[in-house]
Image (cartoon, rainbow over all chains, first blue to last red; front, top):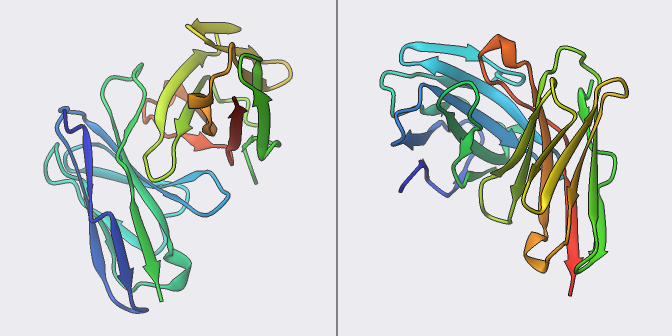
Length: 112
Length: 114
């Protein structure tokens, strides 16, 4: 029962570097989400997808990009890392409308 | 503009007593509410939800109450256990939009003392 798998678990980046946070789910869920959580704050939606090939912006999309070429995978791309993107990133997926989102264990990202 | 607020950053209760966690929202379009529990270094785990057509939903030791006129919901845990110590997040969505987008509160850290 893998559920939602996020890699890597930890990463340190230098300002201006780029990286891709990976997210995969094995529950055949159409809906997938990326959130960030800053210290002492709730989760904020970055991007979401309602199915393969379809993505849309959330509350805080600036500085990020996503793609959804398969049902299983929903990678999040940081092109030019900035200190303000230091955060914990959570990926989630959901099946039908009356089902809750299932979360991965997060990627802790520090940008120095 | 915080649409979902949890005004108590922390709560401490004795084992066996009731824990009450509160959440307020401002957007009248929200019609589906959830509570998530989060342990350190793990992702949030779904706990319980409630639709706006109900005012109460119960699942074992956990009960969620919704007061639509006050735009307020609360989570009751009875009896509280030390394993309940975690951060609890309230979240809200517009169910009818079918996107599943969630707006989260800031979280309340619950400590249950043995």
